[in-house]
Length: 175
Image (cartoon, rainbow, N blue to C red; front, side, top):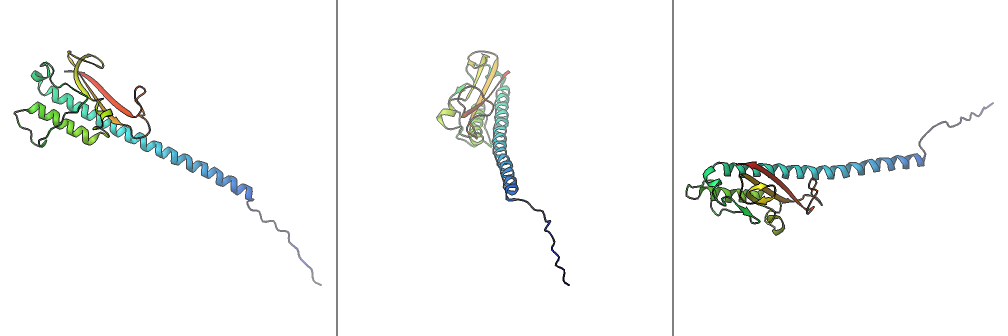
């Protein structure tokens, strides 16, 4: 007597529908993380450029403050639209044209650090001047410095006005 034993298969697994839904959810999550990573890189670049702009603006303010008699003289240290440049070696600056050379070397540094500083659209955004009111160059006891650069993504992240592709940093201080 043989008994035939038939066992019912009770193995449980995943159905094809469950596997497809899981793959869909994982794909959506991975795509979200990739998009977030791209935006994070854009914010990091923008933060780097804003920090460099703040450092450069403070350098210019200190150049002006280093020579207080020249700083209050007429139109000293005024420039707009065209970044100054120095043809000489910026490692050693002589006493003959000390302030002009320092400002020129500062302009060279801006060109190296800020993206697009030499393009016409961006170089038109630079200025250093004495002022009494924000954005109004002229006589006054305040010094205003504005630095501009090309946005690292499709637009500037913090600037709400003006051209979205050109970011600006402006600081005013008493001299």
